[in-house]
Image (cartoon, rainbow, N blue to C red; front, side, top):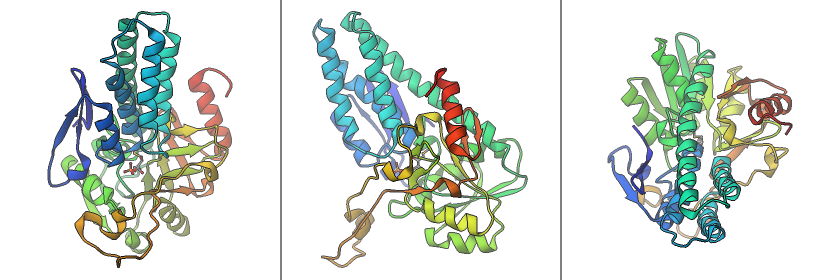
Length: 350
Ligand code: MRU
């Protein structure tokens, strides 16, 4: 299943807020509608946000009529800034916008029609590369999965969240496809239930044994159910390996460490932000309190009581056993292994 696609001048995506009960696809050629969909988590998951951002730039520029390439660049900047204001934490979104800006800048000497084609090619390349990165992460990470294996995961990191088969979830599905006997505990992931609604839906479709638990059952499950490993995704990884992911990930990491269970993070290199020295500098999105106080249409907090709803937390690198990327498995000290892998991918010193 493709969670997001470019089809003849439009972006088509599955509305993830309607899952698991309704499989509804939305098509739009309006960048403002796409930006609203990102804000509402209809399109979500760090790598998918990068892909959506790149397509958003195309939506914002494809009907531009002028022969002035500098004006086209200004139109691109406007759509990019609209998308940049949707969700602050996932590095992939900003990484993709920068790729689109940069390819436009490099080609300003070309005709407007030619630049538009170059931009579309770049957006499609970002999407295709993400699918390849998912496959490579799955292959590298599956080597970490014993047979049989019981795995705990948090949030959703599958095809819905990426341009391919997922990040952390690609490790699970690849190990399963290799013939390993896999069963998964999926944290429900309060407050928007990405684990219960989306991960369980995806794993069930794959035919993988999945059990949803409340987030607060994770310690109990790790203490009593012989969990072999925890694997999660990431929204932004700082230069020292500190990792922002869906709120609750940090709890899971602490519990895993207490029980001697390996805690793996899986992410493409587009999620790394080496300009940020540590997790303390990662911008953390705060969501509308109503998602907690009256989530899914039912009031559960008394009127007038304050709610604080960070969408992400930061797991300090000392809790992370390894980070699985498309280029291989990074081990501590992460400051060195991250620097080395990014040097290798960019071909120059970072
Ligand atoms: O708020 P969301 O649902 O976009 O958060 C998603 C996550 O935290 C995922 O774990 C992360 O983006 C990795 S997705 C491969």
